[in-house]
Length: 104
Figure 1 (cartoon, rainbow, N blue to C red):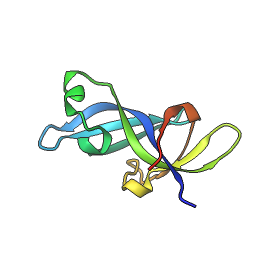
Figure 2: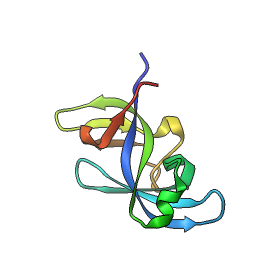
Figure 3: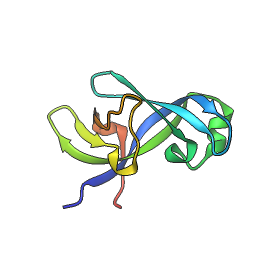
Figure 4: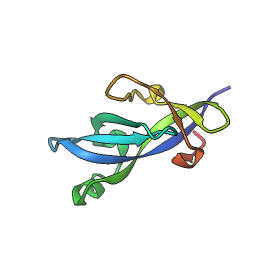
């Protein structure tokens, strides 16, 4: 069985570099109100770079797989798309409302 994939809602909070293709720092707040930070190329988080040019913070997404669930949260993994938090973490407990689900 293939895990369900979804877009995890986050926010771009700062520019790391404007050099092509652009690098941004993105924040995810998990179910425990812990902030996690990711740094990667703009296209990893959004196809519309112009949205980020206007002002930050700005909404973006991280592609993830839903790998588990408990009473309060869904457990998602960012490993399938090669994204990890600055400390290397790839598994996160998030509220179901933080996901935009899609069938892939």
